[in-house]
Each structure stands twice: as C-alpha cells, then as structure tokens.
Image 1 (cartoon, rainbow, N blue to C red):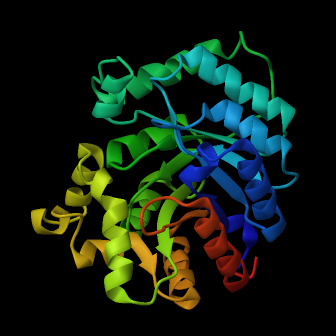
Image 2 (tube, rainbow, N blue to C red):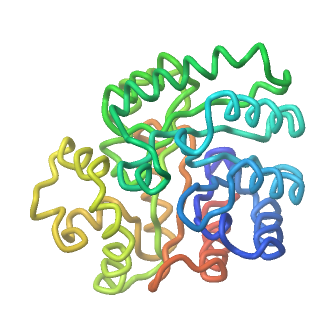
Image 3 (cartoon, helix red, strand yellow):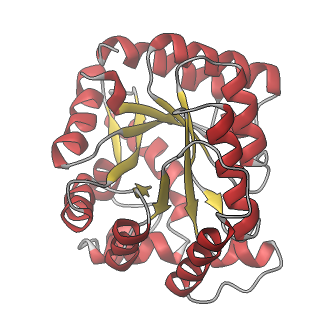
Length: 294
C-alpha cells in the first residue's frame, strides 16, 4: 500500500508532554506514515505552535491541522501561520480549518452563527490577508466538511476536505462532490480488538461525545442513520460503520474501503478503552505499519 495514503490522527500529540510527543512523532516518521494530524480543542496545544514543534522533531512526515478553529484566531493570523510554516518546512505542512461546534465556540466567548456564512467570510479574509503576510510555501488548505454545501465550498474555495467520524459511504459522497482534483482525507477510528463486545464498547466510548454535537448527528442522519442508531453511544450498526475493529487484516480492509471510495489519504485514529492513550496508540500504529506495509 502506498505509504503516502496513510496518515495518523490522535489527540495525544496535541496534549502529551512535549518530549513524548516529539519522540512519538519521530517514530511515526521512521515507520513511514505520511501525515500526522493535530487537533485543536479544550486542553490541546495551539496547533501552529504544536505543528512547528513536531515539524522540527521530524524529517519526512507531513504535519496537518485537523482542525484549526476559525474562531480561535482571525483570518490574517491564520493566513500568516499557514505561510510561515509553509516557508519554514516546504511541502510538509497542511492547514485544515473548520467552523467547530456551537458549544465549543460559546466556550471561547463567540457566537456561532451560520457555519457556511462564517466560513465564506473567513476565506475572504484569508484571501485579503495574502498580500500582507510573509510569502511562504504553498501549504494546502483543507476545510472540515461533512454536509454537501461545505464540501462544495471545499471544492470551490480550498484544496479539498478533511472529514471526521464518517463511514465509507460518506467518502463516496464527498468524492462525488469534490471531483477528482481536490484532496479528500477522512479520519477513521480503528482498534485492534477481536472481541466484538469489547471493540464496540470502545467504539461507543469514542462516539458518545460526538453524538451530542449537531454537526455530526445531522450528517449521520443525512446518510440514513436513525435515532436508534444515534442513541446510547451508537448502535452496533453505527459502531461497525464508524470504527474499523478486529485483527490487522480487518483494520487494513477498512482503510482500503475508504481509499477505494475515493480518499486520497486515510488518517487512522487508534482508539483505547478509557480514552486516548499515546503509548497504546503507538503500539497499535506499530502493528498496523507492518500490516499496511509502510
């Protein structure tokens, strides 16, 4: 499998002590993973600072923001960060930006408003700032996109889309909307656990918070999932669609399903009972690197 098509998404890289995060990122670089995606949320590092730290600790792996919140910095600051890291590390930085969620935006002291309107205005601001910021490398810009209109905006105003908590049928839809010349990078939760009950319990633990957020819930309803599927952390049907679980062969098959559906890269997120754990996540990524033949 082309190692340019397999990335990693894991919240611990934005939260773990800096020496551990740098060491783990360097190991992913050695293993052959293509991109490490960093999130932004309560308790995480500022993503541009975190990306700079991990870019300096590695030599080949790309670092992407998945996702930098448009409410956390104005459009000029976002454009400047993109240009700065693009200049400092040519070809190794990707900027993913998104509108986040109402509860998280309120937590920052902002009014959420209409997501599409906010993103369009923000992209206008980034374009206007282009002449006033440091001229750097051409770092790709991806939008966090789930529903068709945001995917259309990703096609028309950005280099592609980064999706999260999506089954393979969403990747099919996203590719159809984006066309062939835009990047598509879905995040896919995985867990190397063969016992169905244990694996689905980990999947539900992972999904339970996201199923309280309207953006994810509405997207899953759009794809045909019902209230029963969305209740109590998710049905077996939903757990099996969102999280690839089983042995290495089963997880590789789930990754291939998204690639076959049109993904340019799949950002795998190794899940752990009890929540994100860097040591366990790295152990799973070591095993999967061999199975994926990176």
